[in-house]
Image (cartoon, rainbow over the protein chains, first blue to last red):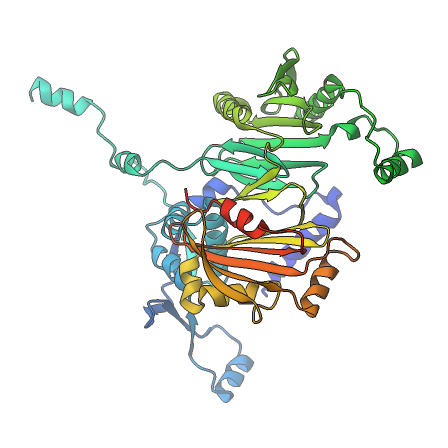
Length: 147
Length: 363
């Protein structure tokens, strides 16, 4: 875990148990999140398996220290790993092409799998969060050009 | 450029997306049913918060997306509203009365004005915290309901937000219910329209001794003698467990059935999620009132299963469950799997069929 992330977590934990410090994580604007557009990380490639499910091919992290690199070389660690998504995951992954907003992905997933709106929203946002935490996708906000 | 073409340019162009949306079938209204309270709300509203108790509790339903409109319903047994301090008499008198088979003494109707003032005082406190002024208005008390069983006082307030509600006492179920629609101050029109729909459909008791339990597209009727024992509301899986003494009803609803059925057969899925062992049960296929074909299992509970049920019914509960009836079916329209299990005593018959037939999975 990077030190700044650990520091942030400790700060918020302190804020939680010592409320007079008035330290709280920033409140997420739901509307803003729903209008973000997820986009695949171009460092990884993906293909469709025999059953139609998406398989992500994730290259090994090269930004590691010399000790880790030496151990990886000694242990003959693979240069890439494969992550197989399930059917719904594959459906959502294919929609993460930068053209669809989170809101649109939620709607399409809900409609395709006959999910309740709230169920679809919870599932899709959690899945996107997980992909983002693993650096498989990034979010961007479409802004209008000036002039 | 001719006048007609200029006129055509000045007219708003038809919006393609809107035309597409108009072609989609209208979304169904949301039915909410919880602890005997039932109401109909606009499409895509969902139950977001609830309590487990029947005697006194609350539910909250929220509008979808960014709309800040919510519906809050609180209820309480009318006898509880005037109780100040619990004395030994209060604790033992109902039990002695029940033992002797004597009726409870007639109680005076609850003071609705006092209860309403408390509700408005709470709303006023929130407004004060938000640093806004608070205004409330109440209308005169009126008698309403199909059988004039309700004494109600409508009210509204404007403070940090806006609320429109009603407090009433129902002589049939002896409950005091406070229902209100709350929104932000500028949502006046929406609050009003939701409130109108809510108060037209809100019921606090059933007429057929069957409680409607409705949430997240599941609707099922359970005899009101059964109490909610456990609930699991997860994305993709919903489970409600009801008990009456040692008897038990378990309702399950799984989403994404197409994915599940790629790996399991319906019977296998039931066998992995059922509370008892199905190996020794008689299996058959039954057609439900909804037209779905259910894989149905019935039989006597073995000693181990009886012990399990006995343990989950918290000890010496009577009547003890000795029979199992269970079934599972697929609703292809909704892409969902439904299962109903009934663990019943010798005397109870036809419970599974009644509950399974009452499940509304597809409109």
